[in-house]
Amino acid sequence: MAADFLLEMKGSDFVGRQRKFNSVKALEAAWEAYKNNCDNKMVLTHDFSSKNSEFVSAELKRSITYTIEGFCVFAGIARSSFYQTYEEDEKFSDMVTRMKEECEVDARSKFELGVIPSQLAGLWMSRHGYTTKNDTSVSGSIPVVISGDEALED
Image (cartoon, rainbow, N blue to C red; front, side):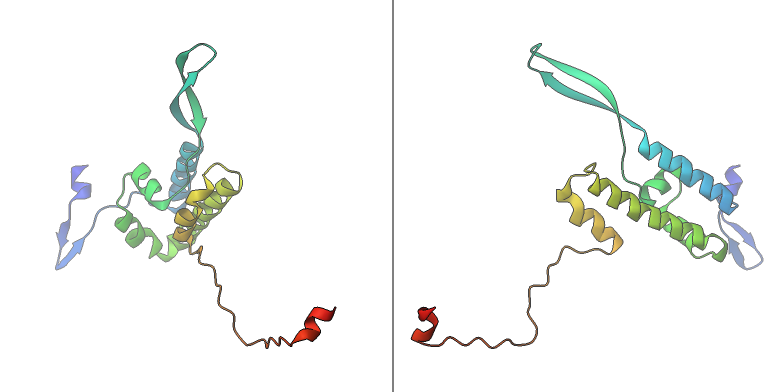
């Protein structure tokens, strides 16, 4: 098994590591498992109960945002290897595109539902090409005429 992860020399070419996912179905199954994991994170939370004058702890189900980076950690592969191996392979490229789109939709949904604080919207959505930049410049010219006392007579 360890030999699967070593570079082998075949002729004058190096043969890289064996793929983690040999089929699109295997990649898709891992992606679905990752999303399920993200949607069902158990988090230990602490709060102070003024009624009982004590700290209370509870384990609550929370969701975290889908990311390609998070998927790579979940699957045990490097992000650079993921992109080189799967995004650049025509057989897998549609699935990788779908994963990226699902990450974007997931982040947008979690902002719109208030799962993620709106203060972080610019940071998160910039990952998907959105910007918080406001264009305040005015193009073209609009003449403004202020006349003398006639304006006050209305």
